[in-house]
Image 1 (cartoon, rainbow, N blue to C red):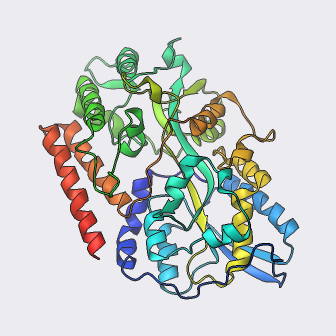
Image 2: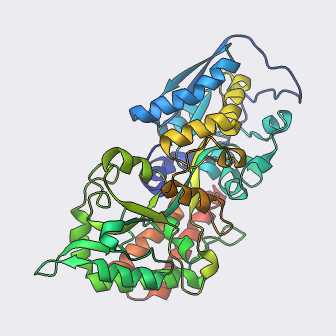
Length: 445
């Protein structure tokens, strides 16, 4: 999986298409699923596979992972198309001309993929192939299923933790609690004679790259929805705790000064990332940053650790937010049976997953791959393997309005940290109303 913008940002472009599709679920071109133990059809076939990889090292790693499949399935030719986004997959499926296999970098669309039939239900394939789903860590099931239906499989995963610059830390250990993070952020911040920020110990703004609430909510054990799908945000005191902590630290920096500093940063996905340039001592980021540092800032002396957690929730320490790449067979795929053979290889074959993980520095998504002796385990990457396997790690369960819910909360968080919103209780109650009203409209559609 390639480095990419935050999940909600990616899903937003596809949201209108997904909503339009929600009322037009289709079952056309439903494949005949093979019986358990059936011999695969070895008629020569060419599969089309769409993915979002773009960088040379990503493309090479993906091709290396496909090499094992080509050796065991010589009758199947795989034709790949790079740099594909979710909206292209949705349009192709709705237009009746989808690829045989499609890969998505965001889990925000999974609920609608499943509900509308944009992707086929893979449960019959799993049953016929006798794939034991205990192969996958439990947390993965929450973002690859919706209402009991599995329409995608996991292919690598992301885990979020804390990166810290050892030189800027000056011997300080990585913080374990929010109070320690705030104190250290203040201690390590350097200002000029006018009070402008030159180096920040930590940037608390929710607009800072990976600081979106989908990632930071795990630091306090916050919940998004109740069992019926309605919003739990206003009623969960954890959100208020997180946003109060964050606002206090923003106020210490000064919102306007913090914004000027943040807006001076280079692109998150380039060598100009402020953590890699020594402008920020500590930053929330995903495991892929290890590969980017190795490529673009090889002399950076840094460490990694789990995210700090609420002072009264030490049980959460060691965990973090988990998400990942998903792959499936779109509705109307021309060669569903052969497509399943490739999907199964990319998502359950240990060597294929380890090959991708070692090259892309993403977390393998099966337990055997996590335990493989072939997996590269340098200390900074091991942190994320440990976070992924930690019982306190969590994800955002598939929800029909996942992107909307995240955007609504983040807009509220920006209003709060900027000082435009004064009443946090009223603000979060308003988030609940917007999310619940959207859910009623979606259900009614």
